[in-house]
Length: 428
Image 1 (cartoon, rainbow, N blue to C red):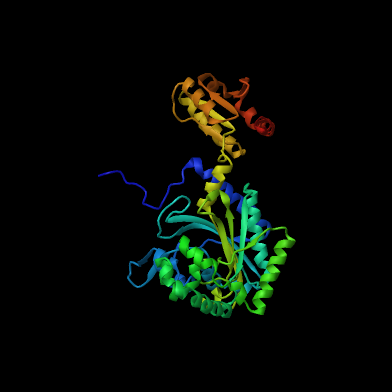
Image 2 (cartoon, rainbow, N blue to C red):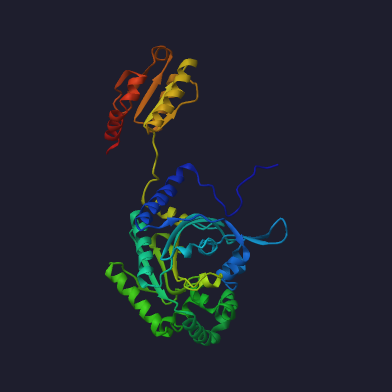
């Protein structure tokens, strides 16, 4: 039998790349904590009905892309989550989070699953960071979440960012617009790509989001949803634009921006980067005031976004080297008693918050010293037969080559001074 390989559309995240992922996650925790968002973790599979009702049966996600299977008992249809919002809303309802009153600010990170053609930055198992603000219909909530996404992306060093903005109005606005859009598109039906022809009766707004060039040209002259907004929706959208201006966040109106899921209302937005070519969208989101009620919860306005981790990592690779976690000490030993002492010493140093790589090879000192040089450690600690007998350790600063013999107890008791010297030597 041949070697077992990862399935198509899945990808190992190897140690040399994990640093980018940790950087993104750490920045997200830092920035969202300042705005008092709390992390929530939901299951990666849910009842299929959650996504059919929440996302919409006429969407591509539900119609073509979900991984759905029957439970082993044969009584339930189960789906691997294709996005994060529906699961968070289900948890919000099931756990009565709304009973706490006020606004709930939640964020999540994890794997999602969609069956589509794998490409750079897009896998069948992919990962997102997202947030959901539930309980406020204020335009300020829309702008808060946009501002936090902008803060996160800029804190990671991204500069060539563009915010696309649109309003998809409320249900009545969309119905009026849907009729106008279909009326405009019907004469062009045979010129539309096949997917758009199918959407003409099921989900015509999604035609505006088509990637087919000919369909895009036709859509450019279509009626604009902004022209079909009621007074309330216009006021909401005008306020969002003014608040973004107040914060100094630049944006452009994209009349073809509708987002791919049925639950969106009012504000829809995407943040794009020029550096990713055709797959330019890094963050997408908007308001979804009807979703909680659609899933049998109380009438609760909400707004949120999701950032694709894989695409963001692609961008970061162009901007910077992966963060490297180098050890403070590389600990070398040879001989039975020395190796036992080295293990104990490494654990004691780690308990004092030092990063220690213990050489477990048992090879000759020369080979261990070469590995110490390659490790990026600031200092090397050496225990041989003589040091083991005397309970000492040889401390060698790798950059200068300076070395001294130190009692192991003294090394541990001078942890504060050692840490200060390590930080000084690490400084550029």
